[in-house]
Length: 109
Image (cartoon, rainbow, N blue to C red):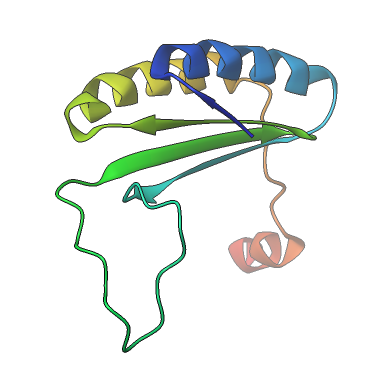
């Protein structure tokens, strides 16, 4: 997995979207990240101090190519706007969900 800067991640994400139109599907995840790289210690052993501020970890994968970025608290709003623009611009090939026949029958009655 490649850890990129915020701007580099967005540009690489655009490239991933272009590649996904021809082959494969893409996964996107976003979660809270406390900056810890080691697992939590067992109960009873001394606990590490709580982080002063949390970050946000964003990951994208297409096949075996994976990219990620870490966003600081102060940059979340700026990144979220740019991220939303990338998603809106590239999510045009989604398929419509087919309605089930049971809903059609219930509607006809």
